Amino acid sequence: MQIGIGNCGGLVASNVFITSQAPKFPVGYGVSLGMLLMCGTSCTVFFFGLIAENKKRNAGGRDYRYQEGEDQLNNMGDDHPEFRFNT
Image (cartoon, rainbow, N blue to C red):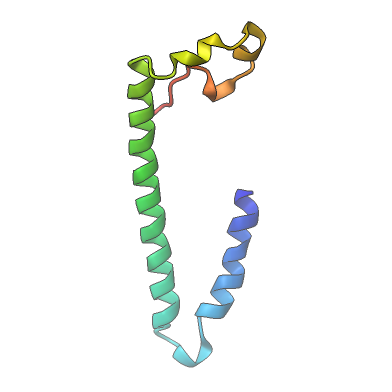
């Protein structure tokens, strides 16, 4: 999925870097800067979200999942209550 979305960058770039705006390309670089800021903000929000999730798990906020059957618990991956995200 990541590769597919990344390849869409070529579609966007071909439409925002307008030849008549050469050599400064204010729209193209503005869109690029906006996307970088959006990515940085998203990563920061995700980072603090993972910290909050780990705190919730440490406090027992996901222990209700232990009521699942043993077979299902062994197959939960990162939904398992003992799983912690590395931050």
